[in-house]
Image 1 (cartoon, chains in turn blue, red):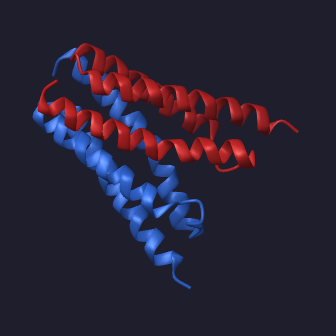
Image 2: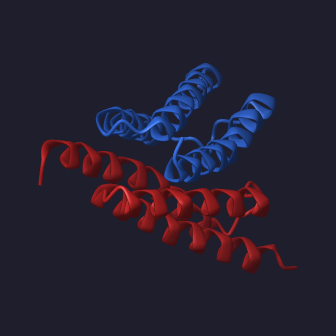
Length: 86
Length: 86
């Protein structure tokens, strides 16, 4: 692994780790009022395109980071739909 | 501009646009209780490393996306510090 992939993986760990407390907080509180479904869909579409980009440029760190973030976003969308119901 | 940069720029627009409502909401409500300063610092460090990565691999879309997100994160950190004061 070359130096730039170490930079990429460090970036991946930091940005995905910063996202996880949101998932945990939503799961614990079941408060989805602050989450907007259109925003989440926009975000997951963007992240999916970053994954495509990472695959195309053969960037392991981008692929791993975006795959984890897609997973987290799917969980948030699931919570949003589930807990928004009366 | 090649096709993959179009994918990258579309991804950049979607992911940064999904981030901006958070900045706007925080500015309007001045409610920073949901924001964690360590998390914000972790996030901005990660995004800065993604910017370094984007510069290294000569990816215009990654550089633009991460530069905008760094700007938004600095604004959020500023709000967090300013509005956390009694």
